[in-house]
Length: 285
Image (cartoon, rainbow, N blue to C red; front, side, top):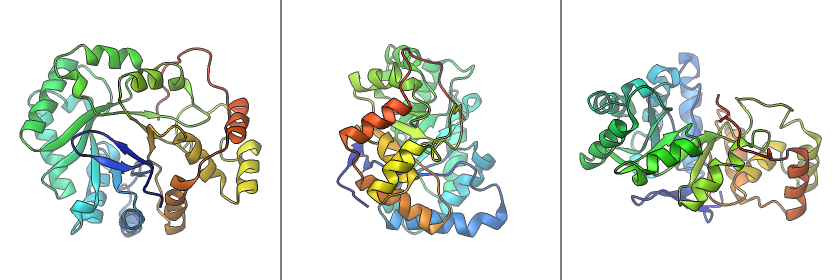
C-alpha cells in the first residue's frame, strides 16, 4: 500500500487515505473468522484505520475488531460511533465503556456521534470532551452532519475540536460536493467517506458497472472498484473506508491508495456523474 498519502485528524492521529470499514460485520457467527482475517490482512497491508460502531451488529462488529487488533493494538487506529440516544452526559461515558469492553482496549482513537438525535449537541460535545480528558478517547467527531450542522457545531464551546465528519460519498452520490466538503476544507476538517463503492444510499445509476469507470479500469489495468476509490481520495482530504472480507478484495482496496487519476479521467467521471448544482440533503445508508 502507498502509505505516502496520509490524512491527519489531530491528536497525533495520521493514517493512509484508505482504511477499513466493518458495516455488516459481526452479524453472522459463521463469518467471524473470515472477517477477523480480513481486518488483520488490511493491517498487514498498511490500512491502519478500522471504522466500526456500536450499532453494527449491535456490538458484533466491535467484537470482530477487538479480535483483529488483539496483540497488535499499536498497529491500529480504531474509530467507533455512538448511537444518538447514547450521546448524553451520562449515557455517552457508559456507551463508550461498553464499546471499549467489546473492542478489548482501554482507549478509542476517534469516537463519533453516529447521527444527530434528541440529545442537545452541546451536551454531546461536553461528554466527548470529558472522554478525551479521561483518556478514554483520543479525539472525537461526528457522522452524517451536513454543512448547517457543522456550522452549528462550530458555534458551540469546544465544537471546533471536532476531528472529522463521516458521510456517505462516492461518484454516484455527490451532494456533499456542493456544501459540506467545501465547508470542511475551509475549516480544516478532513472527511471520511463511507460506502465509497456505492454499497448503500441513493444511487441513480450503477457505479461499478458504469462503462466510464469500466473503461478507465481497463485502460489502467485496474478494477472499477479501484477507480471508484481513487476518485473518492483524489483531493487528499477525504479518507475512504471500504469494507472487504476476502483477501483479494482487501489487497485490491489497499492498492487503490497508489492510484492517481489523470485530469482527463477525472473529467470523464465528472461528465458521467456530475456534481449537483446545489447542496442536497445528505445521502445515508
